[in-house]
Length: 315
Image 1 (cartoon, helix red, strand yellow):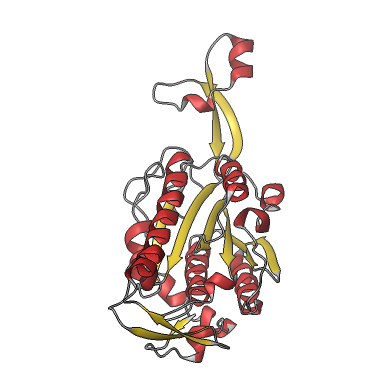
Image 2 (spheres, rainbow, N blue to C red):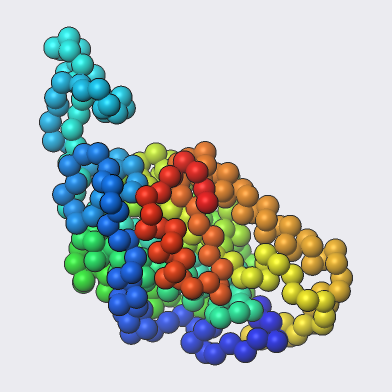
């Protein structure tokens, strides 16, 4: 639903054309600046990963050295030789970066700037271009209650364009009585996402449930997972008391924000959902970042994703 007191242009409501997403390439150059401190290990790509780097290609085993990660101990060689050995891995030159973009009915909501679904598109496009500029392969999935579009991760500019085409081909979700949880929509990911992949999940997480938790709990053991939680400012903070005309594009109604209990219930549900996702990220070494529809997307991503990230602590 839209607030009747905020004028939204057609391009802020409808999902973007591919040209709009392609034009974000120049803005993405500000993201993922190479950090000063590199992570340990041989990094064959154009940038050092701020993530755990699991699932890299095995290179060799060597004698254990102080400071080596005990999780990398090669127990077979250790048992055979009687001397502790460590597995050495080499990161792929093109790391798979995969996006899950929520386009369900709850994402068709706005009071400022644009629908959450449109902001999700722009976020995914910015990060896809940034990944391309750092030599990674790009793929993704757009899901709603009515459809699910998916493209495998591919390298080069062609890989990004295939994904952007996938984003632009998604349809605006109309009202539906069914719900498609993140877990159900992404259950195929565990079968084709390679270990060590970087997974961005862009959603308002309104349909987060036990199935979603199980699915992403499994994925977090094999991939680096980043949750980008989109929200409209009115979800986090109620507007000034008054009578607001709201619409879903077909029907109109009045929302009286002088009814304190109803208004507080909306903000409380949002805070509870946010805390639930943050807690999950803390427990599963995933990264959490909330993004409002009226945020400067490049600035917010640059500030929170360009720095060396502590994946064991949500921001």
